Each structure stands twice: as C-alpha cells, then as structure tokens.
Length: 531
Image (cartoon, rainbow, N blue to C red; front, side):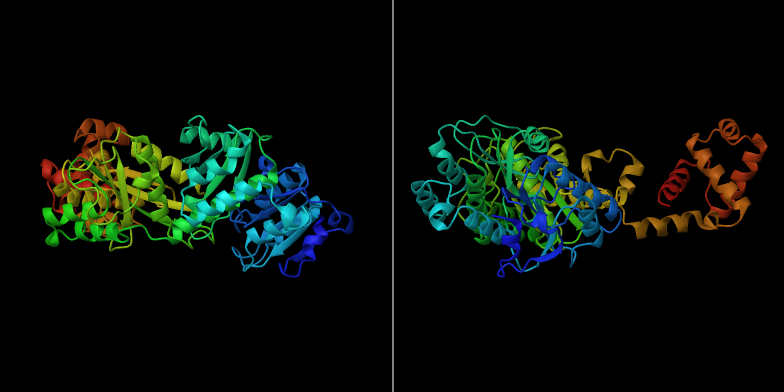
C-alpha cells in the first residue's frame, strides 16, 4: 500500500498539507502511533507515523517541531499523519519542518480515530479480510470469547501469544507498571520497564485506548523485536485496547463506595467508627490494620490531556505500584460490594481504593504496611510518565486503626497545600511527616493567610521604596538568623554594633514587639517566612 492510496480513502478525510508526487508513491511498511517528542527509536523505515501532537506547544514550537520531524526523516518514516484535535489544526511550525525535511504530512480530522487509519492500512496492505489477520483463526476466536467474557489482560495476552511458544510479552503502563505478562516471562521492575521502552531495544506498540487518563495508557512490549511480525503486534494491541476500554466503561462492583468513604472522612461531625468500618468494607478494604492516605490534584498544561480526570488516574497508578510492591494485585485497586473484605476474610497484603473528595481532589486509602519511601518512589515514576501535567500530592501519617483515617486525610490535605505552595509549577509530593521545622509547616498555610499574617505583624517594615525601612527589615532578618547576637549581626551587615542596637530599637517601636522575648522573636521570624 502506498501513501497516496491512504490519502485517497474518502472515509478517512485526511487533509494533505505537503508532499511531492514521488514521496506519495512510497510504500507503507507499517504504522506507529507516538506522542514522544523524539520518536526516532520507535519508528522503522517505511512506517506511517500517527501523532496527536501532545508533545507540541506554542512556546518553543519551532524547535520541538524541528526535532520531531528530523527524527522521522532519520528513521525513514514514509509520512506523518498529524491529529488536529489537540490544537485545532496542524501547527504551521510542523508543516514547515516537514517541507524542509521532505516528509509528507497530512492532517487527521478530530473525529477520526487513529485506530481507523491503522485498520485501513493493514486491511488494504494484506489484501482483504481473509488475509488481514496475522493471528491464527483459532487464536482470534479464543480472543473474541475472552473479550465477551470480560477477561483481564493476563488471560488475553497469554492467549494471543500461546501459539508462539514461550515468547515473552508484556503490557506496561506509561510509568512502567506491569499490567500483564505472558506465562514464564521474567519479572520486570517498573524502573527497568521504563528503561527498556526508552532504550528501544525491543519492539513497542501503543494501545490506542479511549476513555482512560494519560497516566493509564498502556504499551505492548516484546524484548525480542523478531519474535512476532509487526501486523500481529498491532492486532494484539487492538484487542488489548478493547479489553482496557471495556474495563473502563464497566463500573466496578460497589461503584462510588470510595467517594462515599472520602465524604465520610472529610466530614468529622458525621464520622463514626462503625460508619468508617462499614465504608472500608464496601471498598474491599480490611476493617483492621494500618492505612495510609494520599491526596492529589493535577493541572494539564497542554491541550488534550485533561479530557479524562487526571488526578484519579495518577493515584490509581500510584496505588497500583504500591499494591504490586506489597504483594497484592491490580484487582485490589477497586471498590467491592458490601460484604466483601470484612473481618474474618483473608485480606490482601496491600490493597487500595481510589476516589474523589467533595472538594474535587482525588484521594487513595492504602491498607497494609508500606516500606518507608515507597509512596515517594511510586509517585516519581507516575509523575515523570506524563509530561505537560503538574501533579501535586500530599501523604498523611500512617493510621493504625480506621478511627485515625480522618486525621490522616486532614494531614494529607495540608501536605497537598504545602506541595502547591512549594512547587506551583512542578510535580511535587509532600509527606506530612516531613514537617519538622517551622518554615516547612508554614508552607501548608494558604497563601492569603500567610500574606495577611506577615502584613499584620511586620506592618511598616514592608513599606517599599524607603531605603531606611529596607535596612530595618534586613537587620531584623540578620539579627534573628544570628540568634540575637549583636556582634555577629554587626559583622554580617558590616556596620557598627551601635547601629544594630539603633535599628533593632526602631523595629521594636514599629512592630510593638520586644526582641528580648523568645515569643516575639518567633512571631517575627514566622512573619518573615510568610512574606
């Protein structure tokens, strides 16, 4: 199949933006779907590249477009089909880069699914339905039955590769969590999975899944690039995508139970031990044991990422990593119907429930003993997996019993506020246990409250444009930092000690504080940190 054949398919409505006739007659060897800014390692000669352009942004767009198209040219891509949904149209920077590098480019209308293009390519390339499928007939029948039975990805993956005998294949999330693996495939840690996909030594096929967050996108990965033909990988990836979409559309048993638990914990006046235990049971969590609460919010800085709630997806991935590390399984990150997971039943070593709080933030309750720092490690993997999103989170202190969950949630929410304050434009997770200093504790106070407190306590010292006042403020900061030592303060400021005495006296008159008293010193120190 040639590029011009695909462009001539009226059902796809592809809009040619630039090409030369000779380039349009180039044969298509396969299809790759990518939103990586540098896709060179994942594109093979003659492949058609589909991209939603999530990687492109107006700031630095020319440079990003140049790097992307240069990578396609170097890899020998046949053409670029750029999705118009993310930015409304294909950016001019990208089209100009394609012209410079002589890479044919066409726009994909927003209503056209990439899977439709992929199916069209393979259907026409291999000559109709009878020869379209790379999988054996009995395997396709088996996969169809599994999908009808709502089978999970482990069963689907095992059936898809059973006829190849011992082929190692994996389904990874974007943060490296193993969703499924073929029987006998060696275990791969999340960090190893991320490195394997990035290195490009094996072969990767993205699952074109709709209705899930960017954090829950999945990849089909084979360590041996020659273990299966490309068209088979795309066919298996399509089946796995259907499997994931079906799971996303199907509400879990006890749907909403986690949200009910969150509303209960967030309303102390209505909280009771019996009610909390019942809510835990409805979520499939044990009524006894240790718990940890994580709260998160997310802000998409690139178009097209926020169509599905991001914070819940991110916390679901974090919880999945923690459950896997604790000896549970992905199925434990669900809400279960009333009557399951109660006392007397064998609970998993680690289980989790993810929901939404009344204020709109996502939260997760993790049951079981977690190794120190485990939540931070999982958070780092998840946060790094989706560029263009600012992900903030807070972790409460471990709760030994259900009655401590309300307090743990309050701590996690305060830590979330601290994360927002400390790194407004970067991903950050703050543990409430890290508040060991006054300045750390104050980061969780709302910015408006900090500003009001600083203005009230420091008063005239915050008046700008007056050098003398600026000297007083600098002297106060240095004096407190030097633990009230007159000599050290004078030495730091390069002034006479009598000058320090004079300035401190003026500070005391203007603020109404006595710097010989520890309490007044603490008030002023806190006010300085709240500026």
